[in-house]
Structures are given as C-alpha cells and as structure tokens.
Length: 284
Image (cartoon, rainbow, N blue to C red; front, side, top):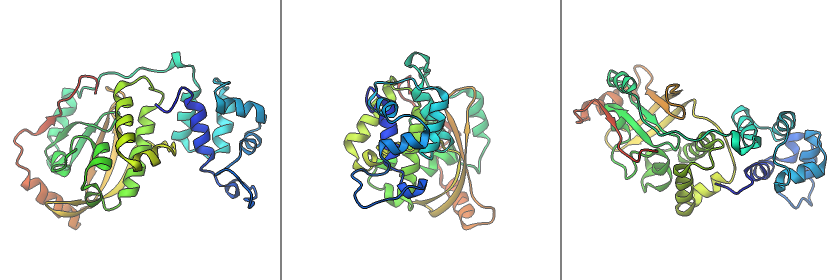
C-alpha cells in the first residue's frame, strides 16, 4: 500500500519522528533531516550504516529478528509497532492472507442481550460488520455510520460528533495500520487506504507517520445529535473465532450524566431487530 519496500518506508517514517534529544544526541542547528539521520539509527541499533541504508533502500529485505529488535529499540517503538516491524521483515510468502469477514451467530445472539450496552463488531478496515440496538443508535445519523474510519475522515459532521477529533483520527489510523499488518495484497485494505488518501489530507498526514497501535481500551467523548454529550469507556476484544474482527463494547460511568444520556438514547432507538448484521461485499 505504501510501496514495494514497506520495511524501508516504515523505517524512514519512524526515524523522522524521533527527536535527537530523545535518544541522547545533540539536536544541533544544521540538521538537514527531520528526526534522526540514517547513521544515527545505525549506531543506536548497533549495525553498520551501509547495512541500515540497504534496509531503507530495499536492497536488504530480510534482517534477523535480533536486528529488528535493535531497530525497534533505537526508534523507540512500542510493542504493537515493534511487532509490525517484525511482520514487515518476514518474507512475503510467510504472510497470512485476509479471510472473508462474517460475524458468527453466537456472537450476534450475545450482543442481542446487551440492552444497556452499545456494542459493535468491527472488521479489519473498521467497517461495522454488526451492532446491537444501542450500538447502532450511537453511530446513527451520519453519512458513514457503518464505517467508522470513513466517518472520521469523510463525514462533514465528524469534528462535531467527536469533540476530540484529532486524537480519534490519530488512533483510528494507528489501529488501521495495526490491522493491516503485512496484508499488502488485501484488496479491501488497498481500496480503503487509496480512497482516503485521495479524499482526505488529514488521512494522508497521519498515514505517513506509520503509527501502529491496536484498539484496546480508552475513554472517548461523543456529541450525539439526539442526546448531547457522552463520555464512554470502551473495551476492544479480539474475536478468536474470526481473526481480524474486534468486538467493541462501550459503557458509561454508573450514575453519571452519560449513563442517563445513554439510557435516553436506548429509549429513542426505534429499531425492532435487536442485532443488525451489516450487508456488504463478501470479503469485507
């Protein structure tokens, strides 16, 4: 999705984000590059400058696990980003291919019983594969209610809906990077990144950073058009029976105004079908 040399692209992007003073190097006043120089990364990682240059240029594509660990430390990568770097360093033939995305009936039934808890199942491109009544109501009313990534970057009311839009956008792109992994042949992922890159300058800016961070847990603010301000905590759970899917469950602090607003939203939801499976292409 970035080039035929994803490892080199990632290394260049990440070293541009590291300030010299963060790793004990003098910043200086005559630096011609943002972040670290190639030779500085090489020294920090304990490899030769020539070898590191070959990695960035794609003339060396299979560094050892020890070298990748050293590069991850030199660039200050967190666990998700370091795992991603290891994935890029693996030979292309060993990378897993994406599977069709279908939500299992048992998971749908479980979500159906959560009447006071918004829940959605997300695919690898953050498309909504299924939701319960409250999960659908939480994101209803937008041009891209069924696609949380496009909602963030393409919906005209996204910055109104998400008061902390920049943080939401940054985390969404980092989650997409983590989900993408090494699936560079995934046509859905390629189409998603291509469309958003063409249509959103903000997406292009954040995608170029190569931040990688899986959705885990977070407190998120919403400004809902029907019930106003909501602050919800979410937990993202991997669906082991369907690799790549995430079950995201939202909760309000007990006794809080957000809990009252969430209850009001539930009472306003008019859908009769408890859980909606979102129709779409078979490989989404």
